[in-house]
Image 1 (cartoon, rainbow, N blue to C red):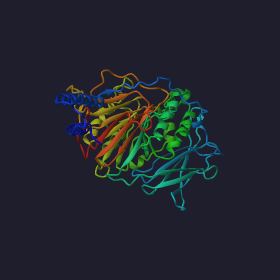
Image 2 (cartoon, rainbow, N blue to C red; image 1 turned 180 degrees about the vertical axis):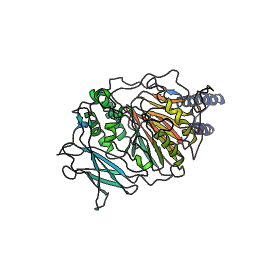
Image 3 (cartoon, rainbow, N blue to C red; image 1 turned 90 degrees about the horizontal axis):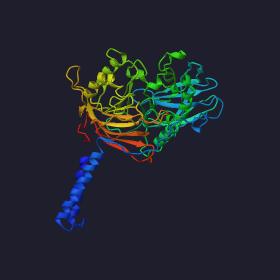
Image 4 (cartoon, helix red, strand yellow; image 1 turned 135 degrees about the vertical axis):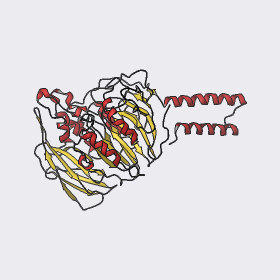
Length: 489
């Protein structure tokens, strides 16, 4: 992938060669000069469009409504006690285990997973555990979690759940062995919800020809807490809605504010109760003491998940864990250092403005010191990509509080545009700050494709476009192996 400057040089070289051959048909030297003036204006306009841009894309503004309970995407699978809401996530730190989760409605049934490699007649069994919970006047189904371990890398596995009553079969592909030049493609979705627009986002992701292999989900799943008494039936419908993707490829979970489900007025004071029962993650494998912050390695990426809504100040468990975790990252093994969180640190929309500021003050110096490549967040229901910037010089007396270009800092990308019922964040701060490279209030998803230890490619896809259309994109150069200036203006 050529950089902007390389593209300009290529165009100029090609045009100059054509002019010498007479292909462009200039009748005089003045015509040739005029051509280059026009060409220069075109190139410069392109450069300006790639940096500090607020999109002028005009979409049809309609109410974002949740799909009704009788929608086909919410249908319970047929058969007695049939497993539903099936989803998988990585089950260890290196990609050789998978957590398989599902719900049975009528009785616990079997908590065993039957699995085998493609083309093999040898089948294996793994036994899981069953959980239930109550939330106000709601009682959950039987929630199963089973970890399949000692899997082979880069292998297709089939698995069956519900082996005592109604069996359902799915499959997944394990990642390649962890290594510095292993290509891999991640999908990115946030703030999905279960509206008609949510369905479009998931459909758009599934049909994207770039074929994401694992979803990095940056928080806010079902939005059940927007219903009276946090109606947990909407957790069930969301699980059935996302099964078509999450049962076949891992979704790496980040907790958002809509997962807190704290409601003292109805006696529900334990944060994250529905989420933590339904969505298990391999937090203990990375030495974490809670499932809201953890890390995994996958292919050539080291992924750190943080919790915007757990204590993160100095001396807290999350702070102590991250302080010890970042020095462990071996960039010769996993060159790409990716951080997921829900609340963005850099946000030029008037929604949730500066909500991430206290966490940024605590952790941003570490992100710069350890050369984090990219930070993905949600929360703001729109899309935004920053320049590589930091604001670490500030202290309480020096007044140095303006973000500055910093090629050791991450790119910050807000991808909270999954389509939930709360609608788009359309009100932006003006003028657009210099650190903001591109912003647009549209629903969509993104792809982050790692090519090797030095290069990766990011693209954002709005729902209104064709499946292969990139509304915004950026070539990434790894901060450890290939730290060149990526500024767009």
